[in-house]
Amino acid sequence: MAGKSEKLLSILKLQPVVPVLIVDDAKSAVGLAKALVAGGLKAIEITMRTPAALDAVKAVATEVEGANVGAGTILNARDFEAAVKAGSTFIVSPGSTPGVLSAAKDSPVPLLPGAATASEVMALREAGYEVLKFFPAEQAGGAAYLKALSSPLAGTLFCPTGGISLKNANDYLSLPNVVCVGGSWVAPKELVSAGDWTGITKLASEAAALKA
Ligand code: 3PG
Image (cartoon, rainbow, N blue to C red; front, top):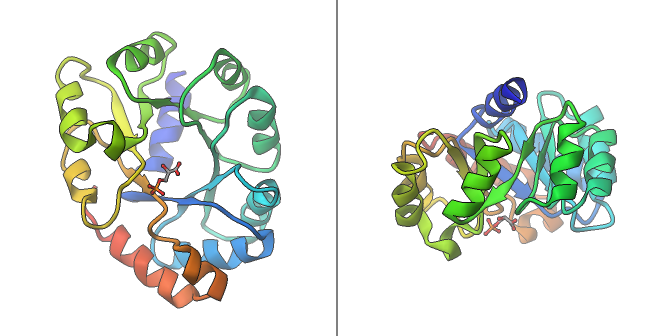
């Protein structure tokens, strides 16, 4: 597990913000990922919320130089395995279930499981996880809540996601228990459907300039 935590951290530390993408068209995912990488965001999470998601992971993994593509919204073992097969270098889940944890145990690809309460964090620590997704970050209590967990649950690192934007990202990034944040704001639907890759690269550059 230590090796997998290190692998995950090395990906999450590539940048302060991991873009969380909902992709409707696998072809546009390549242009989108190239635009994000050009702006300095190399670790990219494609959520398994659309029929195009697996093909999008495959396309980005094979066609976008410099990208580290992960799969998000993994809710069960079957999706975990399919996402790994498609070329995901990391897996993200909004929570954790015995099925997802068991698939993760059998896989060389690291999992970033979600937690929102002290007990969830403790259970994942017992299962060997040191790096967790704090989800849904703003709705669960925001940066103040996460800060309150940092002393009793010292040693756990988080990637908060949910309701984060350029405006409040620093509230999280300045905490000692935050390694990066995740967010969809760097890839707004309007820019993606217009194929405005220059606009996406600009948003990515602003996000990449935040201090991790
Ligand atoms: C999600 O899973 O939808 C992510 O947490 C992204 O949240 P956001 O759209 O609020 O950035």
